[in-house]
Length: 292
Ligand SMILES: NC(=O)C1=CN([C@@H]2O[C@H](COP(=O)(O)OP(=O)(O)OC[C@H]3O[C@@H](n4cnc5c(N)ncnc54)[C@H](OP(=O)(O)O)[C@@H]3O)[C@@H](O)[C@H]2O)C=CC1
Ligand SMILES: O=CC(=O)O
Image (cartoon, rainbow, N blue to C red; front, side, top):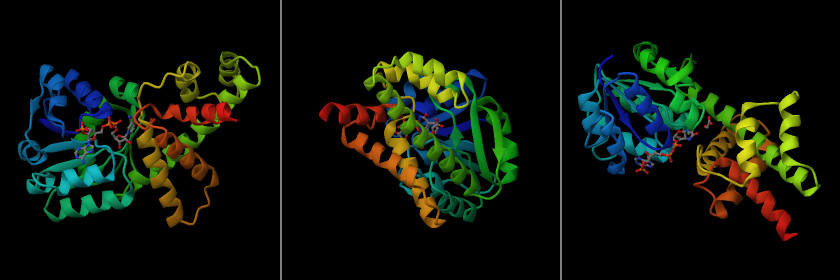
């Protein structure tokens, strides 16, 4: 495949671009905080001085940015994607955003003759490092097919979900469920502890039953140790709950569990936990217990 551009080297973008380099892809990378490109350069990447410069150089460019505001700013801002996108160039946004943001970007890019694919991912830092993401793409089918060799390295499975917006919506539904589950799990861990049960035994019991799942297995031990090194930052999970609730509003779907989970993530942000892993939402319950 030709050289790929990569915009956004946060937790996910860094892991994904390292993985592409490891598999022999040539990359030109850009990050708003440019020093974050250094490690990628040590592993063979080239730096692009702006999103526009990356687009100019590369036929295909992937973005992995924090939220709708970041995704829009990289496309529409000064020296942004729109300045160089055009016929024969493809833009693939893998950030988790809402359908409206994705549609806006699609409209701007295709009106300049470029092609667009949204491709948010399920899976966190470790799956990104290991090429085990689940890719939820939608948009231009020809672009999807052209970038499949890269998706095959980044993920264990790629879905093509049809028109732009479907990938964003699927991702938000999945993360709405995940955020609600994380809250139920947190309440269970704290309840077990406060009522005199052994937390590790609770994990063992859960793991053998019908609600065993990789998230409980992976996050449980660190949550018991109150250790929340960020794989999926809590502020991003709260953004996803907020966007999923808006999708619920649009479709008149009552989501009382998701709304309660969103409040817990907001509380965690107000406690200064936004940059920690989303499992730190557990601390909202621990601290409630302490103050009563
Ligand atoms: N971490 C995870 O487990 C997963 C995350 N996601 C989603 O992937 C996306 C990235 O997540 P993650 O890597 O964890 O997030 P990080 O917070 O680690 O990285 C965010 C990236 O966005 C950039 N950025 C933020 N604001 C702007 C802006 N205004 N203009 C340009 N660049 C900007 C940051 O640049 P800078 O370095 O300059 O701050 C950084 O490169 C999010 O949408 C998240 O919801 C999806 C699946 C899993
Ligand atoms: O968006 C987060 C994830 O783990 O998936």
